[in-house]
Length: 167
Image (cartoon, rainbow, N blue to C red; front, side, top):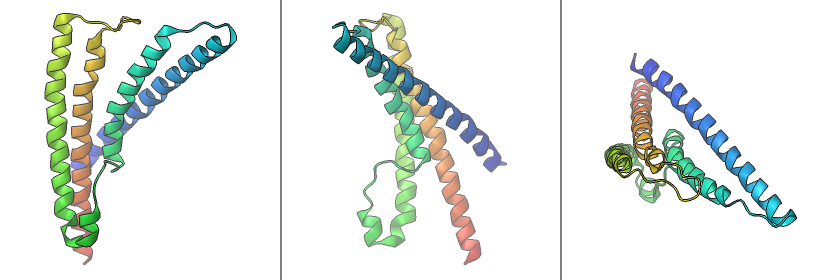
């Protein structure tokens, strides 16, 4: 039952991550290409393209955190695990718990930051995008990381149970 729920969540999050990351990066690449082409052909610069690229970098970095948790490619120092293989499982669970705590922290404080942006009604300088949209990525990222980490913990538990049954 829980496995099926995590599979549905995985499909939804994967679809969201892959397509929004693809579309945002393609839009940024097209804007940069147009900017460079115009700059070197008719000596005209699109000021908004640099701002757009900056916002896309923010978005891809934060949403990419969720994809990194799924792919188990978060930054880790694994020298201790290589020296003492018996502590791999406890350290993995500890790492996942720290990731859960971090994702809750980002969700909570990101929500507060987004709420503050609603109150102040600030916008970006050139494109005048309301900053609440950019800050809303923080709680989104925190929630997605939380779900992905729960999924990874569940997969680890299933794998440990299967290893115990086979031995």
